[in-house]
Amino acid sequence: MMGYYILIGAIALVSWLVSRKLKSKFKFYSKVHLSNGMSGAEIAEKMLADHGIRDVKVVSTAGMLTDHYNPKNKTVNLSEGVYNQRNASAAAVAAHECGHAVQHAQAYRWLTMRSQLVPVVSVTSGMSMWVVFGGLMLGAAAGVGFGYWVAVAGLVMMGMATLFSFITLPVEYDASNRALAWLKAKHIVTPEEYKGSEDALKWAARTYLVAAIGSLATLVYWGMQVLGGRD
Image 1: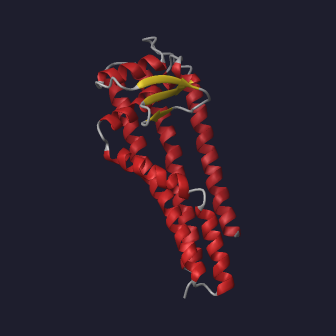
Image 2: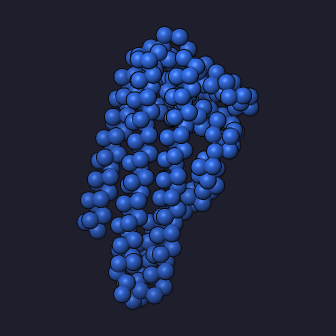
Image 3: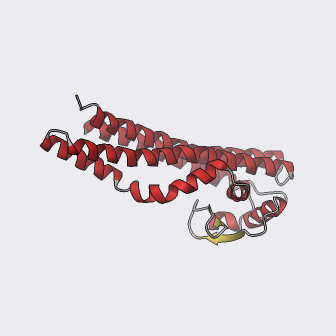
């Protein structure tokens, strides 16, 4: 178990460092005010309109960095620090979330795959670790057998969460690429403002990358505990 604690500690540390860097980047670029004077909400509405999307609403949501696109009710939810703000960070986030709306409208395959996995992962991700633990305990008490297959079932559940994390990567990177391309093509931001938006989105993407690597590392570790202990 000591190896697991070290692994979790290392992943948590890297995740914290990246998250801290992301927050500092957004705080820094929130001071880079847009020369066009547009708010995050106005940028989002314009990007949707430019892509011919008329059935998605832009709404404000509480919290910091709580921005997201909801495909169920077709809403682009912008946090308080984005919806009314007029800076490079707000422009980046607003356009990124609209990038997901564009993906949805165009049936982007990676987004479709991720959406299909949501119901499964929402159920299995929380219980996978407990199933693996239970299997290992049963295996130790009963000489593998039934316990082994319970643990394998837990690994499959864990594997679904890992798959979800990796499918999320192209979805997030593509949304950022769409956002940046639109911001540049429509001259929404100046070259200096563009650099700020690009840098902010890069750090946002790295949080998903760290999460995916962490999920894979955890899966490999427990896979070795379960599969490696069998003759």
